Every structure is written in C-alpha cells, then in structure tokens.
Image (cartoon, rainbow, N blue to C red; front, side, top):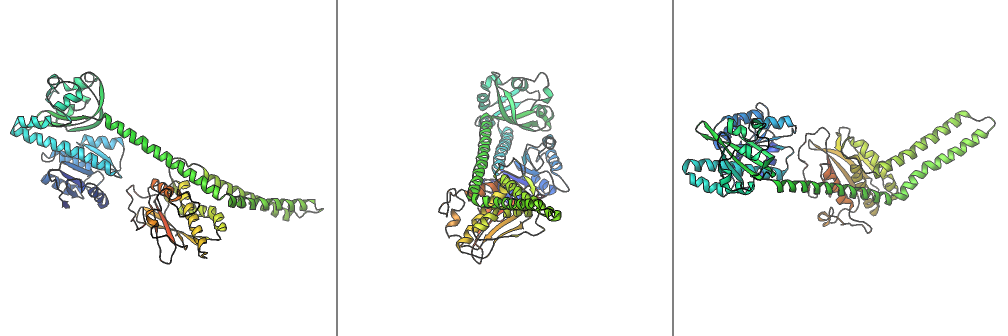
Length: 527
C-alpha cells in the first residue's frame, strides 16, 4: 500500500487492483486532478484503507484473488463508515449479468477495461462531486437546516428529499428548472406517480423505490423521467438512503438532464466512425497508388509464366506431331505448363488480395507467413532497385491479431522505402525484415536498410501528412502506416542503428495476450 496526497485532500479516491500496471495507469490518469489518492492491491488492504479514510470514490477491480471485488463491495456497504462511498467496478467483463450483480451489491458505476482516460476522469469527477455533496448535506443537516437549504439551492443538479413513501418533502430550485415546475408545486407530490408513467403498474420495480423502502443506494444513467407537463427526458440519478440513526426516513435523490450529453456522445461516435471510414479509404487509395507504381514490374512478373506456358505448349505440339511421341516427356511438359499456370494465378491472387478493401475485423495471423507473402510481393521492387530482401523470423515468434491486408500494406511500404534507400547508396547488403517479441503482449516487426540514413531533423516530420523526402513522393505513405498500425492496437517508430542506414518498426498485439493498453517502450524516434 502506498499513499499520495494532492492539493485538494477533501476528495479521496481509493484505487483497488491486484495488477500493478492497471494501478499505475489509474494513478497516472488521476494524479494531477486534485484528488487524494489511496492505493491497495488486494481486498483486505482496500477494506482497511476505506474504513480509515472513508473515500468518496472507490475504483474497484472485480477479478482479484482471495477476495474478489463483489465481496469487497458487499463488506463496504455493510460498514456504516464506508456504506456511502461510490463504488465503481473495473473489469474486462462486459456482460449484463456481471453489471447487474455489481449494481445489486451497491455498486455505483462500471468501467470496462482497457481504461479510457477521459471516461475514468469524467466518472470519478461526477461521483466525487455527488458523494461530497451528500456528505456535506448530512453534516449540515445535523448542524442547521437552513445551511443545508442554502447549499442545496446552489447546486446545478436537481435534488429531491423523499420520505419512505416517495412523497417529495424537499426540492431545490434546479429540480424545479429541470422539471419545468415551481418548487412549491413539486413538494407534496408522489415522486413515482409524478415522474414515471408505469408507477401504477409496477411501483416496486421503479428507480429509487428500493432506496426509499429498503435503504439500498442506487445509481442509474439514461433512464426516462417525466416532467410536470408529461414531456420526457433522459436522466442520470443517484439515490441515497435518508437515515435518522438506524431508522430509514426516505431518500435523497440527485439527478440531472443528460439530453445534451447523450447527443454529444452520439455526435462523437459518428465522428469516430467517419474518421474510421476516411482512414480505410485513404489506405485503399494508398494501395492503389502503390500498385500503379509497381505496374511495370507486376506486368513483367505475370508475363514470365505466360511466356513459359506458350513455349511449353509449342514444344508439346511438336512432340505430339511426331510419328512416335515420347509420352513421358510430353507428360513432364504438360506438368510444367500446369505449374506455370499456378504461378501466374498465384501472382494475380496476391495482387487482388492486396488491392481489395479489407473486411471489418481482425484475424489470427502467422507472422512468418504474412511477411513471406509480403516479401514475394516486394520481389518486383527488389529487382527494380537491384536489391535483395532477407527475412529473419525466429520459430518462437507468436501469432498476432490484426487485419492482414492493412499490416501487409504497412510492411510493403516500409520494405519499398528501404529498397529505394539501399539503391541510393548502391549497398550490396540486403534489406533485413525481422520479428521479435516486445514484452508480453506484442510482436515487433522491423525493416532495416543500409542506405544513407535519416536526416537529423527528419524525426519531427516523418509521420506528418504530406511531408516527403522523395522528389515525386506524396507524403501520405508513413502517415497512413501510422494510422493503420494504431488501428490495430500497436505503435510505429524508427531508429538510427549503429552501422548506418535506418530501421523502421511497428508493433502488433499477440493473439493470446490479455486485453490491455500497449506497454511497448517508446524509443527516441517512436511516435
């Protein structure tokens, strides 16, 4: 256990996870946000820290040895000192049953792994604000009711105070604004009958009902509430039991209209989808451009087996015209025709695979097979540049998960650049294409040349759109490569190796690796 204090210690956040890397990601995400951070790597330490410090928010991993997150949450809610802490579950599990179980035990929210920094920050901020408000309300209520009212009236979220039957005893001005009604008209109404059209049919299953009747804290997002004029809106709410000693006296409900927030989320998702479509279109355009540049070499590649087929066919016809044809020799010639036709067919299939738009989704791929296919495709460029390509693939390199067409596009782009660089220095050394493990979860694929190397100022610009060092270059090759590799969950960068030349590399996730943020160490030239 370690503890770090920030400039606003009044808000405490407890981070609980048995994975040190996950704890590090959470800590780095929240350390500069003004919270007092506590860290625990197992359930017992979490319970001890929570009891001593009463954190507002607890980010709690579900899958932990000895005591899982569900048991920790259950014990937290059973302890009066920690019962009101907002428990936000963390898990790679994303099924409905897991979420329902977490909420049933008193969980306030749920964040899926791998973590998205902005989501963690936003959810912690929301829950910290609500929990802090609730604790302030409870303290002020014990001291002076008028002070409590002034605090509530200044809050932008709507707040209700309900009795055990759901009758609204208190409503702050924000509640009146959200519900399009005066506070006086709201007070005395039944919360369930006013804000839910199904109150008469199923009152026991309505939001907040369990808080009022059983003292169970609740939190839900995107539920539909009705205003006083019967118009509906999506809302997020948190309901906390209102207690006097051990007696349940109803609930405090904090809610807000999230109409604009949902619209923004939808717009953001649509923007992301548009970016993905544009990225795929740019990648396809880049492949067509590459194919155009290689057209002459590809034509030569296809012409070789076709010429051989023509010659073998003429020989076969001459043999068949003989008075006593040599059938064995004729059979061998026909076999050669068949072999050359397969060769021409494979060249065309390889071109079609490369040029087509890939289907959505990723496959489990053999690194050796993928790079060998790419090497064969690059043989045209190798001959045009008087160069050679050498594959260095250890047998123990694991399979990867990626889009084969897009990965091949990146590898071919880097190999072609390396061949051109080697040609510029008339180097006799081959372009080296290698694959190695990079940590537990990634494979690193490197393309090394022995050309003139990279200029000192190239590192800042190489991956910028439209930057190029070639006279006829468009400057979209490397930026497209970066976009494609990042879409696969990897990173791309470069190094200046000893002995001259340049080395470009990219990483791809291993097929059997657990889902987690990339842990690939960045080099001086990584982007």
